[in-house]
Every structure is written in structure tokens, then in C-alpha cells.
Length: 614
Image 1 (cartoon, rainbow, N blue to C red):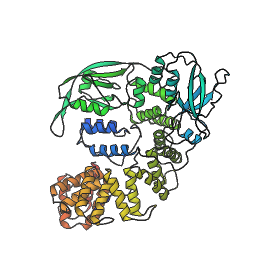
Image 2: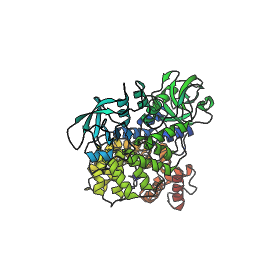
Image 3: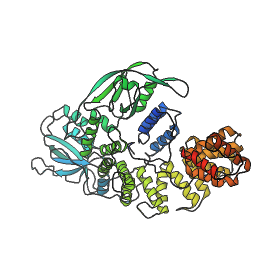
Image 4: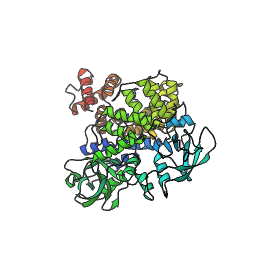
């Protein structure tokens, strides 16, 4: 009677910055409020939990609330320790543009140079790419390939920090700094260096360097504006009147915040202004960054939602925004300059913007180019993203073997999206020979780090005996673990296990509880199994009205696969059950035949018609 769901992978889950072309193994309900859809579309692929939490704050019982909670937990768990198996491919020097310190040129430490110099994931510093041959200034104890980790006792993690430390407090054209240098596996040593003039003056030098991560180019400027807004409103699910600004927003990345001079993670970036909303009437624009409401600092995207909702409809507020001279073009130009100077995070963010059409026209080829740029600069999430577009042939020639190499680099650099994608490639033989034992190894790494999608897949492997010995109890354990993380398909599977007593003791009440969880998380197979439990009163009080509702919802959600399974399994139902299903389909406007309990072509067509409505 109960359906575990089809065994094909519904999608591939990527763990990185929101702007990645990720595909979830959830599908979305088609009919819902358009404003909610617009909000959800802006955050659904984000790698920042705050953006998803902002959606939940606005729509705690929304159509996508369960999915948002799943992704928040997945993202927060993705910060766990990354796999280190496999060998990272090394390059002689990082493939990025160096930063000039006068007598030295330096570049960021990335995945390639970590492998080349044998330093672990926790190491920070910048790599010396050139030493100027000047007898008066050349530091004899520093050479190309050294890893600079300190300047005057202060840690250095990026070229921008190095520029700021060298420039700070500069009293003359020469500055002596002490570097802790790690090279060729030796113990740290120190060198005294007389730096050439960097053409900056104290005490402004450090501030200039921190505000300009791309030292070779001046950034466009912007201004702060106070915009009066009269809020519109809406009624939430609990009947409360809430204020609404009428804009689609995302968080401000650390990169962008530093570049335009606002504190990290502060503000909310406007991606779209909703027609006829309060923001449009007040003159708010795409690419404005909301910094404060009535003088109250906006500490991020979720904070903005909470502040606005604390006002009643009709309230008059003052919205402080930062607005670039050229609007969205200012932000895009700024990010391009950073990307082209070797900043992998900037390249990754641009890839996401062009992939999703955020602040720019959607352009998959340009997205792929920037993902590659970020990947080659050593950005782990960009490696996964570039591997993904290569696997699909999105904006670039399809090349699954190359995609696997990028997944492997990303996995070895600690990106959990890369770990999962590498497992998936071995699972299905995409770019490599199918090897489910190897897929198991990588799925297990992701699962041990808390990845619910990998947990679900491991459960299926143990259930079917793919790459591991068949073990119903171990399958149930992984389904339970994934369900606890909020994985909808696993909730359905563990529910089926409790009904059948396979791998766990028989317990229909527990089974129904898991079916309900699966249904509420949006899984169509779980919806149908809940419907049949409610119809028969198995493990739950009988409620045929609710059962009928879940039948239709399940078919719409799961689609043709469930429709076909219901029709095929109908011969195992008694006549009364088949008649009831015919009436449910008739009430949904899909069936016009007789209520006779005979499942013929008309019933099949009705099931398929409802399934297509999803």
C-alpha cells in the first residue's frame, strides 16, 4: 500500500555562496502568493542562512517555510570539518594577479599553493611571487614561494591586509616590517625588509587600503540618502497586520560591505522593487543598500524584515540607503574589478549574479566564465559551481570528466558541495566509471558532516545493497538521521519502514508521524501515504476528508511517477478504496466516469491529469 518513492535522484544538492546554480531535491508548489514567490526566488539558492531566515521571518508558515528550514540546517551543518582524502592538484604559483608591495609582489594563498607548499586548511598568509632585484632594498632572507604570515607581529591573511599593515603609520618612504616566513617545510623565520614607497600617506593609508581591496583601481562612489516611506501592509497567518516595504532583498556580502565602506554583513541589498509597493512609491531603487530604519541600524537582511514587520501598515518611516552613482552598475563594476584583480570570492559572486539574473541580465556563458575565474583563483565554492556548469553544459561546453576534477579539487579544499557532487558523479557514472563503493566513501564523508542528502542516499544504498552490504537496520538509521535533519524523502522512507517493520520494530503510529512530517516538508509520496493512513485509520484516527485532500496534493507534488504507481498498485486495493479514489478524482474535476471501482483508462487519465497540475 505504501510508497517509498522512486529510486532515481530527484536532484543534486550544492552546499556554497547563494548565488550558486544549485538544484534541490525539492520541487515547489506552483500556486501561491506572487510576492512570497518573488521573495523565495531571491533566497532559495543562497549559501547564507540569514537570507533563508529572513524569508521565514516574513512567512513563518509560508509555502516554502519547511524547505527554508531544511536548507538553513544544511548550510549551518556544512561548516563541519571537510574531507582531506585525495590529492589536490598543485600549481607552481597561484593563478592570480599579484599585489605590489614595492620590493615584493604577493598573491593570495589558495588551494593550489596549499598543496604545493604542504600547508593545511587552517593556514593563512600570502605567497611571495616576485622579489625586486635592488641591492638597496631587496630582503635577502625572503624569496619567491615564501609564505608571509605576519607583519610587525600582526597576522596576514590577504594581500589587502598586507598593504594596510605596510602602509599604516608610514612616516617616511621606507618602512621596516618583520615577516614570519614559512618555506620548504622549515620552521618560521624572520626577515627585516625595507619597503619601497607605496605612494600613500599616514594615517590615511590603512583606511584607504582596507576600503580598496583592488588597489590598482579607484572605486565608484556613492551617497547616503534618507528616503521617507509610507508602508503598505498585509495580514499574516495569525491575523496580525504587518508593515511591508515592497522590495526583494538579499544580504550584503562581506566583500561588498568592505568595498563600499559599511560594516560586514550590515545592510540589505535591494534586488527588485515590487510594482505598486511602498518602496516604489517612495523612490527606492534596485541596488540600493538599506542601512537604517528611523535611525535604527539594519544589521542584515533578517533584521530589516523584522524591523519593517514591527510597524503597522500606513506607518511613515525614514529609510537610510547607500546608493551608488550608477546604481546596480556601480556594484557590478566594483565586483568585476575585484574579480579581475584575483579575488576568488568576487568572481564567485559575479558568477552567481549572472547565473540568477541578480542586478544584471541573466547570462549563463558569463556566469560560467566568472565561476571558472573564481575556481582558478582557488575559491572552493567556485570550483564546485564551475564543475556543476561543466557537468550540465550550462553556458560552457559540457565536459563531465573535467567537472569531476573540479569537484575533487573543491572537496579537497573543504567545500561540502564538492564532496556531495563527487559522490553523485561516482554514484551515476557521470564523468567517471560508475563506482558505488567510491560513491559510498564520499557520501559518508558528507553525511558524517551533517549533509542530509548524503544521509538519504546512504540509506538507499544500504536498502538496495549498492556499494555496501544490504542492511535494513543501517538503512533505517540513515533515513532516520536524514529525517531528523528535515529531509522529506527520508521521512517518507522511515515511515514506510515502521509500517512494514523492516529494519525497525513495527509501529504504525510512528509511521504515520513520519508520513505527516514528509508531507508537511513537501514530499508527494509522503502525502499519498499519509492520505492512505488517514483513509484506513492505520496508526491515526480516520479522517477521509483530510485523506482526500492529501491524495490530490500528493499527486500534484509527486507528478506522473506517483500517478503511475497508484494505478499499478490499485489492483491490491479493495473495491471500496478504489471507489473512494474515483470520487476523490471526480471532486477534483479530473474524472467523469462511473464510480464502480474499476480502474480503467479513464481513471489512469484522471490520475495523470491531476499529476500534471503540479
